[in-house]
Length: 435
Image (cartoon, rainbow, N blue to C red; front, side, top):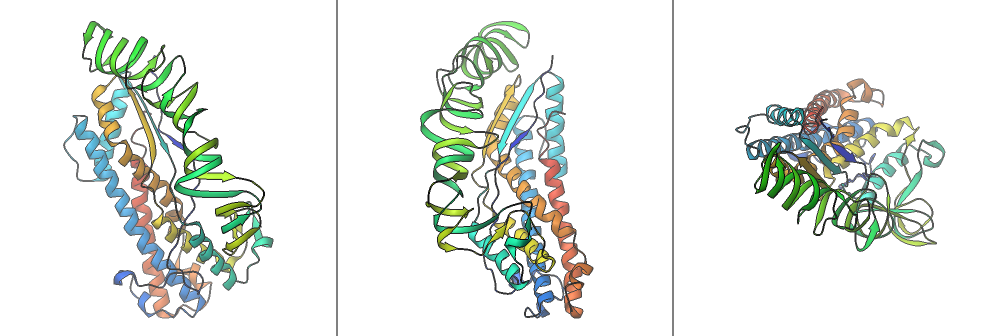
């Protein structure tokens, strides 16, 4: 029976970032190199409604540039995988390139090939800058964050001592607590997720660099003994599915322990190295993602969910904030923040059973693929939120004037174009699914 596996995104926590924050509504006022829509250069940022429009124009313009970049990343990586897999010459558009990749994956799955790709969302950003931006919005709107926050918590970005839980997001942070992302340590830990390093389990499902000595079914990048694509074989190279033993890199299921470096699968025993789990895991090492820990007055350089003794940002609501005057300004903050998020160190693994060429093509490009997927996840929500705005949205805030109305109209179109690019990337990110 054919086994189907689907692309799985391991959820993490995104902390958005913003730089260049101004005092008026927390919205940027830089003209971004003259690339803003007509009318935006003549706005009076001392007028609240016009300042919010200017912030919207800034955020929409930057978001479109970033969205187009991500779409181009998918074009590059889908073409690279297709060419490496030996199927297609480079395509001209992202839709064509990633569509060809999806067809390649589906064709392989129909032939009994198993494809299992896992991408951990572990982008990082500047917590304090985002909090300062939203705090400026709330202050201008005279919004009581403690009273108006629903469906979430009130937190502050803290540089000091925190009396309760502290969430730190960084590419690599020393962590003794719960890690959402990848935990890397020198001691063996029980790993309910994907292990990269060594695994002491008596069997494995993943990739073992030193091969498999018993009941192997998968892709053998070495010498296969048993059956290759259904035909008897003894110590020969195998491009299809190997069943028996594999001397070399073995990717698939095995009834023996991996005696070398293990990656790309689940370890049902103790893992030494890096563990990436679907949910938060206990970590005593380096966390790539978000580390959450609680200790009496713990030193904190992140989001504090209690009292911060040190440098703290204005309070921020992690849920819905019922202060209408600050809503649009805050959405500008989030959109501008998503553009600056760092997704350059993604955690991803891939297992392909039964197609050696496809396995090598995906393995060589999984890092670039994961970065594009992570950026798409980071941008999708803000793009959708900005694209939902209309000129009436900003007219309701106060006097826009002719320049403000023109700027708002042009910026709405820019936001819609940004969302269109992100929609292409969202579709592209599903190319590795086998359904």
